[in-house]
Image (cartoon, rainbow, N blue to C red):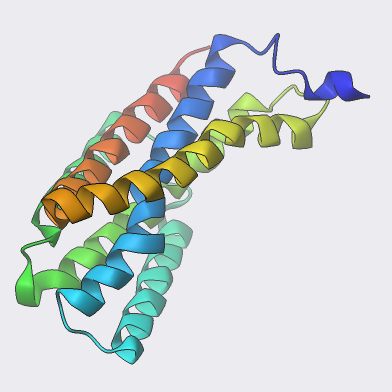
Length: 188
């Protein structure tokens, strides 16, 4: 029974997909869970109601984008588009001023646009699995460890250097996710 939990014997593609899932989390988790709410409060001066409304609209935008683009081809063009938007929005987020909501919604679009990559790589990693649930859990172990450590590290970096480097890093993490995902989807 416990043999099902043994991570040995998984192919390199499985672990590359796990790394891609981890970078997807690094691109979104510290941003959404910790940094943006604090940034909107402390730097933008938004009320809690405004922050809540923006997060609601962020999730509506991401969900609508995912729904509308789920069947679109997962191509190099799509990976480049979502990567460019993610990097540009992330880099300018800390100094966006009045344009902050537009950049936030650009990131929401990117998140929704990229869901198909995420779902397809997880499906590929577990395609012929005899233990789909266990394999999905194993895929997510590095991601969960990265989530914990990214929150801790992001807090320290923001304290020492401000929001800009962390925001920019999330954009570049998204690029890594996009291209590892695309590569894994295109390999046998």
